[in-house]
Amino acid sequence: MIHCCMLEYLTCATIEYLSPTLFELLGRPGETSLFVLKWDGTIAGLPDAERVLVHASPNIACSRAELAEVCGRLGHLAFYDDMLLGRDGELKPLILGPVVQQFFESVGRREETKGRRRRQ
Image (cartoon, rainbow, N blue to C red; front, side, top):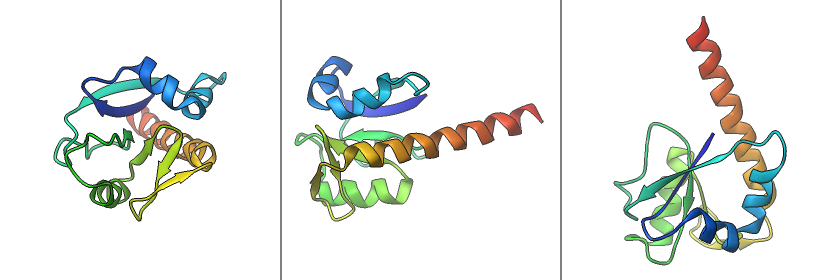
């Protein structure tokens, strides 16, 4: 299960419309599903116990550069529409798909490891 932080007023349908690449990856057989975490748009409101996708809306309460730095440190993947928010705070078009796929694989491996630890 992949968690996605998004502002209170956004819905999964909105993100699906704005980020078709992300939802195409989510919809593939065998891919994980998306669980929405309502987010207040602040750095303090980001989870730090798990890696998540973060929708980098223009209405967040920090700069994109701040968000990029914190997401990089926490292992989150920030995106806006079908663009990746790079570590420099700039939006990077056309690379969201491969980066999201790597993120899903990374989070999936981490979840498998946690599951094995619980069973042992």
